[in-house]
Image 1 (cartoon, rainbow, N blue to C red):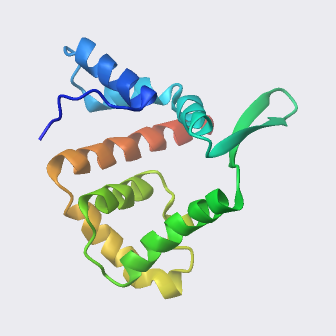
Image 2 (image 1 turned 90 degrees about the vertical axis):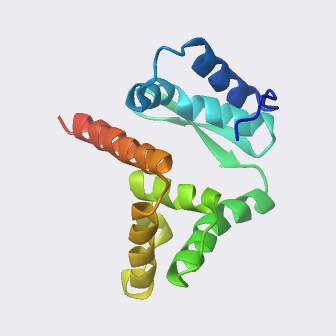
Length: 161
């Protein structure tokens, strides 16, 4: 069911407004490419406003990049616990709720699997469960995972030219 209430989060509200105003654009791949242009900055700023992270500037030879790091030990623990929690559910073959299925699918699509299931001999069952979860995602989430994987792949390929 789609809620008609405005989201409380400013970033979510901005994205929803874009989707509503640009109704003629329906292609998921186009939206992913468009939203990806400033996603790191916008999500980092969202986490900054919520007090979860602080910006750290890292200077390279030709540029300066902003990285967002957790502000407290509790936040660092939360960041560390998320992949461990998902790995445990996958290795034990747990039934995942839709939110965790989407998370598992996006971990798979973005190539973050190695950070969740880092010990292949121990996590082999988790890898098999992950594949079955991705295969059994509802059609709209499976499409999101497929397009996300394709977008990540094209960015990586472009970077190797």
